[in-house]
Amino acid sequence: VMWLPGTERELVRQIAPGFQQTSGLKLDAERMREKGIVKLNLRYTKVTNEDVRDYAMANLSVNLYTVNEPWLYSILWCAGVQSVTSDSSHVLRKVPFPIWLMPPDEYHLIWITSDLISFIIIVGVFIFQKWRLGSIRTYNPEQIMLSAAVRRSSQDVKIMKEKLIFSEINNGVETTDELSLCSENGYANEMVTPTDHRDTKLRIN
Image (cartoon, rainbow, N blue to C red; front, side, top):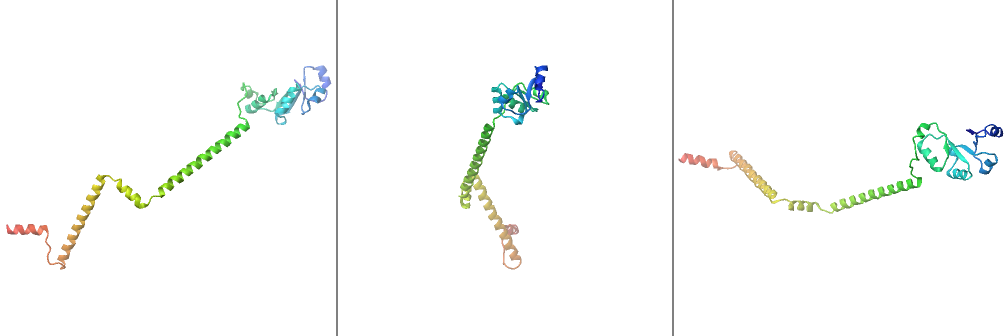
């Protein structure tokens, strides 16, 4: 049991010597000894790790309030706080040992290192893409066409030649049709076709 009020301390010591004389103010260790105070009860934001160590060296215990989160409980536990006041004791009792937490300096180091690595990778990819596109732009359209023609197989070349021959034949047939039309209109005197020769042979027979 902690006795917090600053009044009636002498009477409480006589009536209930088992009570722990506790200060709700942050006082110097020597002054607390003079008053017979053996414990401090403070808000956790009002003390530092150095304060906890100094009070521990002076054989003074510290109780901090109000601690409801396991991560905060773990920090204070590692700092050397003897006890805490909590509204969530059912949660803190499930923490058998302090939760591992990363120190701020280590976190900053990892964060900065990750950013630098990401920046270097992005710049490297950008330079590689620029170099690759630059090498492609050095080709002329004629060079690309010639290289494409060289890479064609002999079969493709043969097929292309046949297409050209057939296109020439088709053009010749169209020209013949045009000439026959001209003869019918009086532009030509005579037009001989394979059909005419066949008719002549039939007449002779």
